[in-house]
Image (cartoon, rainbow, N blue to C red):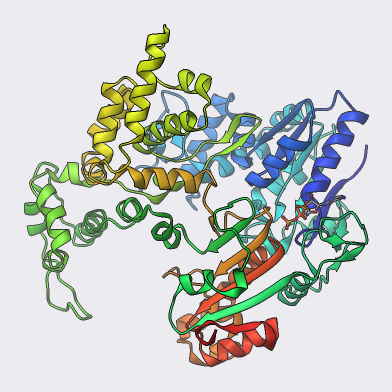
Length: 624
Ligand SMILES: Nc1ncnc2c1ncn2[C@@H]1O[C@H](COP(=O)(O)OP(=O)(O)OP(=O)(O)O)[C@@H](O)[C@H]1O
């Protein structure tokens, strides 16, 4: 058998393409082979789905892959989980802090998206830790995995946890039976910084053979030049010498265009009406993409900002969290049944510094009339009920990964959003005339032609309600039998009364916009989600949006160091590296044209931009 390998290469070098080719050639050379392919990105998943007609292929996320390998060994799982919880370094946090934990996990251990270890429910991080320990402790698990898959391929290896790499390259390799492990990726495109560098040791020891792809088949020359300038690891890409490569025209590499646009104040309209994007069709989401750093920055333009505000920035959720921490700090036990307003009165809780110094936290919260309305709604609720208020952005916008019609990563969307998406899907199916799918999906029972007519009328009516509130639409869809409020939704609403109260008045059109955005029908994407994809035209909007993990000024202003506080100086190298990588990923998505928009840049930033893009490509939109 061959060797373990790492196929590494810059953006557009054809790593995903090669992965598909490798799958196909294994399938024709060794038809009986079973292959596991681990990937996180939709792009790779879709590429594999569309191109590799390979039997015996299991595509999954790393978490599902590991969980599948250990889930049936419940006895060992329990022992190992207890062991990890009770170890002095406490790698998995105990549900009863400070005590030796001895729960028997009566109902077994399950893998969920959220953690309630006391009930035997573990989440993402625990799956990795548990699997790692189990593969180390029980070599039989390694043998079973080796029997099951003769090939294991890991896409985007640079974001793979060192724990996983150790399972694959140490624990499995210590066994007699052998398989082949292949890694595909690019260290410059790591988003999580966990896996980079880990594999180098295995390469040095000759356990993994490194193959480098140097050519670029995607980007035009002007983008390749920017990409080369951004890389700091010495990899200089050349356009491919393959005249049929997508970035070639008439046997020469396309030149393409790159521009750095700026204006005094943030004004996207100015960018979109400028000559720089002439001919770009912003309604064609397959061809043109606008990349922003966060979903929050997109929400406004895409038309779901109120939903986003509720899920991501609810003042009551933040207040009750801070209150709980303060009560703990002051060692005050809050009885579960006291009304929240009285509970707050049990603490002497004031601002110690800043502009609100001396004022109570509650008074400051209530200064905003909108907060007052929210507080009025819950102030008589028992403390226990307020404690349960839980809102999380992922419950709104987390995306699924689907391959071959099979969902390999379930979105963390909550029950309410799932229900609302189902209603919107009924409308979409109707609009795209997929009537059989519609009949299959709706709760409406169709037994006769008359029923079909009734269904049509009901959906038409539903469609006309996009100005109506979410509550109105849910209740209409239920009443007409289109989408029944089932027990699970009812239970969710009962357990999340506050969330439902906040969401129910929002216009349903926000759900429709959110749905279109998540399903990729809008020309917006976050800079993180774009990995692996490619588009004719790419507009990158450089706006930090209050997220401190990234800083676009650092990209261009090379003198920024002198202006930083000591704390900023400490975080600077990491933030810079992270931002450079993200920017590299974004720029290299462009197949023809790239525009980078920077609002209100300083002179130093402009100087950096001129260095990277060239004077003639830096355009002052205010002067146009
Ligand atoms: N051997 C090849 N023949 C023809 N087209 C290719 C070949 N290799 C890659 N391509 C095309 O080149 C483009 C870039 O390839 P691919 O997406 O596989 O690169 P990648 O290395 O995975 O990029 P990234 O890391 O930036 O996501 C794609 O359009 C792909 O279809």
